[in-house]
Length: 303
Figure 1 (cartoon, rainbow, N blue to C red):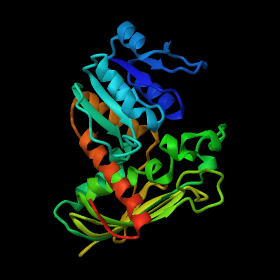
Figure 2 (cartoon, one colour):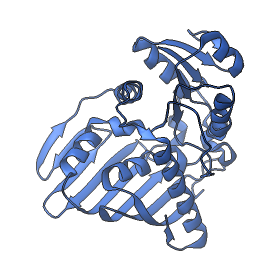
Figure 3 (tube, rainbow, N blue to C red):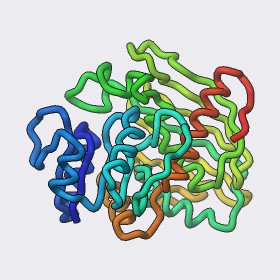
């Protein structure tokens, strides 16, 4: 299969490498001249006409996702599309798109612990869940200046609510639609950025009465975990140590970071439909907007 990766930052390079390892013919659209082991195009029209890709991965800055989708559609691309998370900078109306499928890259759905949790929780109602994700922003992309990254700039789609929105996706994946949110947060630390760096959300989900989530750019070292209680069992999932504890029994899930990306691409290209859909990715944007509104208004916002 011929694949086009749009954008060649750290995540674009990861997608290109993984798709190549999976045996696909990869080309890159990037307006920045840099060394790369792939054919490079500087305009989308040229890339589409020269390579006729079957699969397009949009991995440029969040603020460019919508225009990239519309440009792909405008040039008549009708193949499969994957958009890096988050889908857009804000939850504008979804455009009508001619693609055979369109998904959002919430790859943590394919983490074996998330998959096992979802399997174990079938048929049980969750009483409460607490999720946490934090990592010190200056350590995210070694060899680069974090102050120049999109993460540091709100007008480029940065901020912890969007960067760490994996949690918002997998909470809905595990516990059903979020129905309301009360949030506090914003730019609270001394990091020299203008995007939000800490957020705390108190939510209700269709299958969980109380869900609490904290996201931050501050943790040394990074932490990512979930604690969920049903009437009979407690689940403790550590996505850094790759350990799941159910009551007193522990199970380890050895996994390399690329595995979830490989599984996501294979799912999309095979048509299995476990990947986050365009509509589901748009719902996550609505939750982000509701959290921001709640923090400003100091009130509960219904989704």
